[in-house]
Length: 286
Image (cartoon, rainbow, N blue to C red; front, top):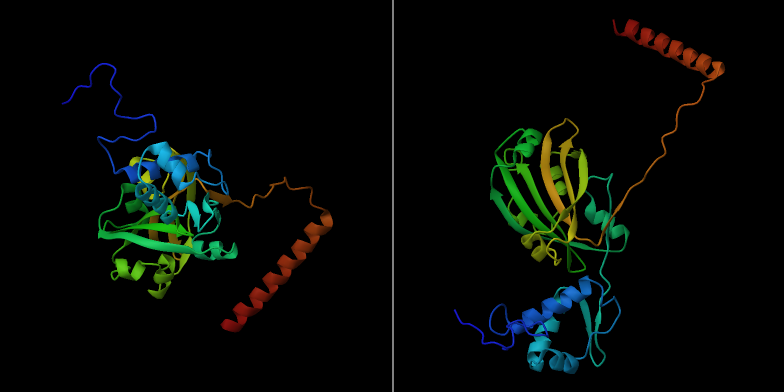
């Protein structure tokens, strides 16, 4: 272990780069600019410093700066314009309806957006205890996917589905495909189920997947999807990036007012009429 002499410059230089340890310089510069974009010192539409200014700021070559900017462009965080420099891209906002089960692609399309799905893994793995109760089996697939909106990762999905119902699921079949759509093709029609949303802190893995900061709040959607007969088709966790808006159609619940005698009489007449018609049908069926 080396010991710095008194008065020596610390390893973490004033410009934020660690030249003795850590990732390559271009990755460090990319991450510094990324944090500035996420934390909003650099707002959408604002220009980034020029390549020459970044060279001077970080004390690196132009090729290192260009690698860093290329990394930001690949993440969809900046737009590089020939002869005009780079500007911060507007972060796309994913909007979804909390009451609607599935149909995320259709919801994005309604806002003129397109989602892309990348499957990380499809593995034979037993689910958590709460999923066992919902799916009534331990023989499940664990499916991990990332959803991209305009090439920006907006959701990480971890889903368990029964292998007995869907034995042929593979990474290739699920890539850029609708999971609920494949379920329908297998003869199981998702109807919905209970959901809950809560704010959670991003751990290092989630922060890397969703290009967020560690401990940054994410929106976690948990739930189960069943078919019309009550069979559990999926149990899922979906972590949404901070640029997600959940739309809720809230209704005011009013106390019932006083019912008029006329209305009660009308309902009684309808009831009598229905009972009479049911009696006629029963006699005809004998």
